[in-house]
Length: 375
Image (cartoon, rainbow, N blue to C red; front, top):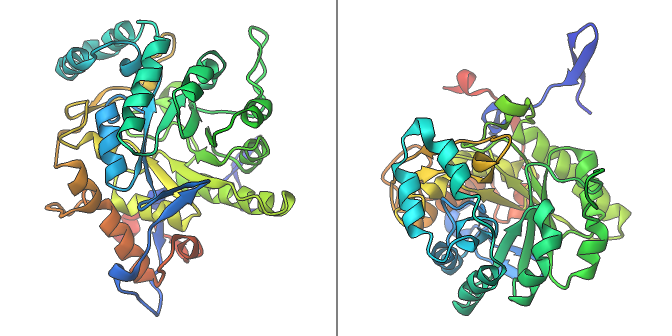
C-alpha cells in the first residue's frame, strides 16, 4: 500500500499516478516484434488484437463495428445512442459536426431526447451479427433492466454495462436498483461491467460474475468529469489497483479469472502500452478512432456524458482526421506522435521489454518518470 501524503492537517490521501507519470523499463533481453503475440481471449471469444473501441456515437456505428471486427478487434455499439433513436442518424451526425462550439452541448441534449426504439436495438445488433463478427453492445445501468431482453434476443455476444461509475450496490430511494449479481447470473452471455477505479469496487464487481471489469471514469479526452464533479483517479494507479483485485479474486474464487480492461485516458500508443504494463488484459479507447476517416463523428468526438440532460460532464471536441481505421490500428504511420499503428507500437514496446505474450508483459518493470523529467 502506498504511503499516504498529508494534504492538510485534517486530510491525507494516496499519491496516484497517470500514464504520463510512468515509464516502461527495457530489459537485458529484447525480442523481434514479429514474434510478439497480442492476441486476447475473453470467454469463448478470441481477438487478434486486445483493443476495444468505446461505445460512443462519434466512433462506433454498425459499419465501423463490422470494420473493426474484420481488423481483429472489437467495437461496442452504444444502444442508447443515435443508432437506436433514429432510423437514419447520418444527417444528425453531419449536423453535430457542423455545430459551433457555443451551442454544441445544448443541441446535443435536444438531439438525444428522441426516445430509444426497441426495434432498432434488434435491427442494429442483427446487422453486425450478419456480417460474421463478434457483436458487443452497451447499455447504462439505468437502462439495462428495461432493454436487456431485446439485446439478448437479437443475439449479442458480449453485453457491456458501462457508466461513468458502476457499483455492485447502487442505493436509490426512487427506483429498484439493478442487482448486478442476480442479473448477470440469469444471462446466458458474458458481461463486461464498469467503470470503477478502486480495489474494493473492482472486487465487488468481480463477485457479481462479470467476465470483465472496465477501469476508469472521467479520464477520456472529451470528459469534463473532473471539472464538473471533482471526481478523478489517475489511470496507472487505478489499473494497478484493479489488477491486484483480479489476482486476489482469482484466489478467492478458486481460479476464476476476470479480465481487466483499461477504459479512458489513453490518447496514444505509449499510453496503451503502459496500460498493459500496469496490468490490463485489454484496452478500451475512443479518441484515437475518432480521427479515422470512416468515423461517424467526421473528425469530432463526444461521449454520452456530453448530452446528459441535467449535468453534462463531457464536451464535443474537434480532433480532425489522420487516416483509415486500418492505418490507425496497423499502420503504416506517417506521424511520430503515437496516434497511428497502435498495434505495431504495442508489439515493439513488448519486444523492447523482452516479452512475447501480453500476460507476461503485465510483469514488466515500470518507473515513476514524469514527462517533464524525461523530455
